[in-house]
Image 1 (cartoon, one colour):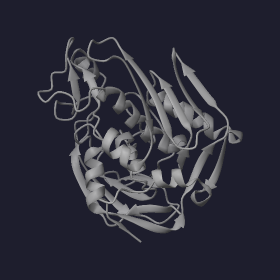
Image 2 (tube, helix red, strand yellow; image 1 turned 30 degrees about the vertical axis):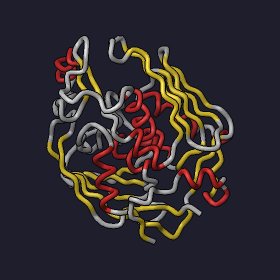
Image 3 (cartoon, helix red, strand yellow; image 1 turned 120 degrees about the vertical axis):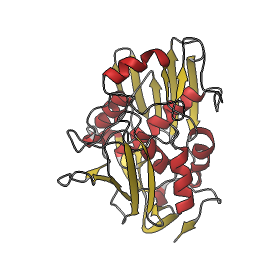
Length: 305
């Protein structure tokens, strides 16, 4: 049986926001079963807590934002991806700034901190969203589809007119260990030629070679190069996991994306939630042993009961 999880104790992380450029401290606290992931701004006295839910997503330009206006929570996707990757269902997050710290541009720093903090099993069984019929959305030549599958599988294709990227395709079958080893270290990326434009739009103010892969017109300019040959599409999978975690459940379904982004991921999630005939919510105890094994944490992560 797979139980719901939270973190074993309070933990704090400080860094800068990749878009805001502002220093922020993120504090995470253990939460009870069925709480979900909840964010709250502590730098704004009147700010309301915002649950990580696809229906609470606001702007999706270059990141996923929860809420709108002055007390919104920006760039949540990497942290949400790490939480999903470790099967952590319930955590309360406080932030003294507008944006989740970008760390090194991947979710690996969050995975490391959460692994060191420890994971606690709660006395309640996980629930899974099992996809029973396909749902697809399209936008300007891009698409995202979810269809029945016995486990979470992500089939992602990206296309960039750059000699280092071109077309990359990866099929990833989820397990906690696979996520940690194959996806969590993949960093966000951007083009050097776009930096000035992004900054004029109020974005990428905190971006640097320390927290993103940066490409000039011909190559990667980071001194240490790439972590994976296809790091770009692996990061797209990382983002996709963070975005679809906003459905509120762990998933049994195959997601296929082509040139997708945060906007399309959220449109897909909302369409799923608006189509109750396309899914069932089931207890983890009723799933196959294969799925339960996929969500088992590796032995090097401490788990308390």
